[in-house]
Every structure is written in structure tokens, then in C-alpha cells.
Image 1 (spheres, rainbow, N blue to C red):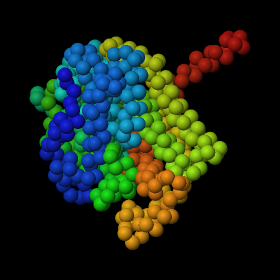
Image 2: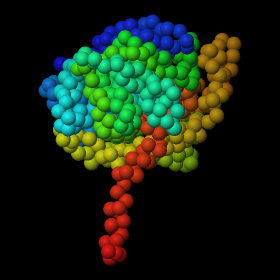
Image 3: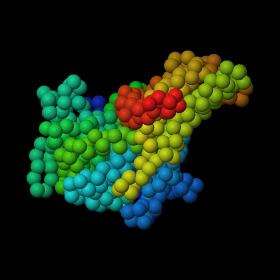
Image 4: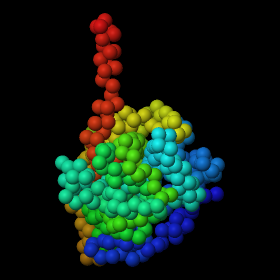
Length: 481
């Protein structure tokens, strides 16, 4: 059965990569204290897929091979698959309280499945066959796949072929019978280092004269010519200090990578788009729709944990019975469940593409993500409100455990009978981490910019809204010709 254990996954990523952090090359990245929590998070995915209680969500039956596979390698075959995806993502958010890094590749695969089929239908190419063969390998080996879309973009007022440096958008620089050579960079790459493979996509709709930018392909994340730079996050070096309490979420974490492609060769059988400009925008839109659906699950699961932390710190502070405290917790739950409702709704109204796979309702997926750009910020604000100012003025763990001043800090951090100051310390640090520290990147900031910043959803909502039909509704009611 093609399901890796957590230990097998860990062993499988122990390979040489050209990685830099803080200006220095990193060897054996899997042992680096800043990186290990993000690896623990991915291992949790592999762990849950092995547990009977979670197999309905974490696994699926491949329509390509008939084998039981990890759901993160599945091509949606029904509305039920779309719903289970969102439920799975909420579960993983609850279990890790951070970004679990495997969604982007999942959503990329599902978008490419239908787009490659339609390109073949129009042009007689064999992209769909190539992609299916590629994806069967992913399924059979339970590989983690990154999806890479965002280019550095250079001068935003100019098109890709107008840039002073043409590498501002990843593009083809050479082509032969065996494949292509590409150059450029992809940024904000969630989990790229922890992935076995990546699928690269255009970042926008490509126009005539820009064909070399309309390219999609699969690549090993440690391929020759790829350089990785680990993204800096607030409070990240706390993971390198002695102790773990100041980290907040000391078990799990996210990861963002700056990926540079310097004349990277891509073999022909791993190319899924090469110059088909009219399908570039459709690939971007379908991927974005799938990924905006995802946010109705993953951010909700993390929100569940943050709400739990806010309720727990209220108990530790002795304020949980106050009516205004209860009302704020209710508001947090209301906002969080609204996000989840959007994720389930866009899944429930899904439809089947000509290729046979299922896709979510695009309008509701964009409404889902538009809400995600707002509600987590309010949930985080309320959590900070309930926690109090100590989340940003708390002394360090070293002070807390000091023989000289530790007892004094414990004395003055003590609140209700039977509640230890160390437990209160842990929860306060966790809330800080999730609203202001490393984890805030994958909760608040990613809620804003992941799967496209707010205006991108508003553009799609305007396209999908069908205002003319709404005008026709009022005309019919008022007998207007």
C-alpha cells in the first residue's frame, strides 16, 4: 500500500540541497532547530494517515491505480471528495496549529489534471498523459509535492517581456528535443524544502509574445541549478535558544522558501505546458479556486486552537465567567464557523470537469478566501484582548527558570487556586506565537496574502457575480421590458 510512515518520510528527505539561511549554507537541514518544527508538521500528516480513526479523511482510493493513497495525492472524483478535503484540512489545523505545507501541491495537481486534458483536446498534445504518469509516481511513493506559482514580478507596472531583467518571471531560456532550460525565481514557497517534488506554474495570464513564460512542469526540489533561501520569520531564532517555552508552539511550525532557478533543465516528460498562452490564465484561476477552498479548512482548524487558547487563558485568569468574556469567545466561534461554512458550501456546489475530476464552486471559493482575509485578524485581535498585555511583556524562559528571580516571577504570575504559573506561561506564549510570532505568518499574514491578496478575490467575484442576471430578476418582478 503506497502510504509512507512518518519515519519513512523523514528518511526520504535526507538528501543534499543547496540551502542558505542567515547568509550561510545549511547542511543536514533536517537537524536544524529552526527547520525541525516544520518537518514535524509534515510528519503529522503521514502519522494520521496510518491511524484507523482518521483514514476516512486522510486517505482515498486512487482512480488512476485503485490503490489506497494519501488524500493529499488524490484527484477529486466526487463532491464528497471536495468536502472531505476541507474536513481533513481542519483536522490538521487542529492537530498542528500551523500551516502543514502540503495543500499547495495538492491543489496544483487537481488544477493541472483538467487543464492538461483540455489542452490535449484542443492541440492534440500529450500533456494529460504525461501528467497522469507523473502523478501516479507521486501517489505510489506518497510524495510531498510543492506548487510554485508566485514570481518576483519586478516592476509591477510592466509585463513579463517588458522587464529590465527578464528573469523577474520564470521563463524558458533554451529548448531542445530532450526538454527545456528555465531561469527565474519563485517566492513564498510553503514547504518547498520539505517536499520531494514541485510543480511550477505561471503566475498570471500570459499574452501573445510572452509564450516562453507560459510554462508548467514538474521538478525534483533538489535538482541541479536550484538554490533555496530560508525565509525569515518573527521570533524564529527563539527555536535556537535553550528551552522551548518561549517558542510558543514548540512542536510544530511552517516554512517559507525563496527558490532560485538558475538554468535548470526539465526533461520533456515532465513538461505540462509550453507556450499555450490561452490556458495559462485558466490554470492560474483553477489553482486559485482550489487553494481558496482550502482556506475554509486549514485556517479554521488553526482558529479552533486559538479559540481554545483564548478560552483557557480566560480560565487561568479567572475571568471565564464574565459575560463580556463569553461574548468575545462566541464571536470568535461565529467568525471561525462562518469560514468553515464557506469552505463546505463551495465544496458542496462542486461540479465535474470534462476530464472527469471535480472542482469547487469558483464564486463561493473566492468568497471563502475573501472572508479569510478578514476574520482571522479579528479572531486574533480578540485572542490578544482576552490574553492581556502579558503576551508581549512576559519575561524570558531563562528568567522564569532562574534560581534567583524565577520564584519571584512565579509568585507574581500565579492567579487562581490550582493553576500553575508555568501552564499560564505556556498558553500566553502560544497566543503570542500565533498572533505575533512565527505562527502568525501561517495564520494572519498567510490569511491575507496566501492564494492571492484580497483584490484578486474581488476581481474573481466580480467576474462570477453575473450582475446582468440579477438585473433581470428585478426587471421580471417590476414588469420592465
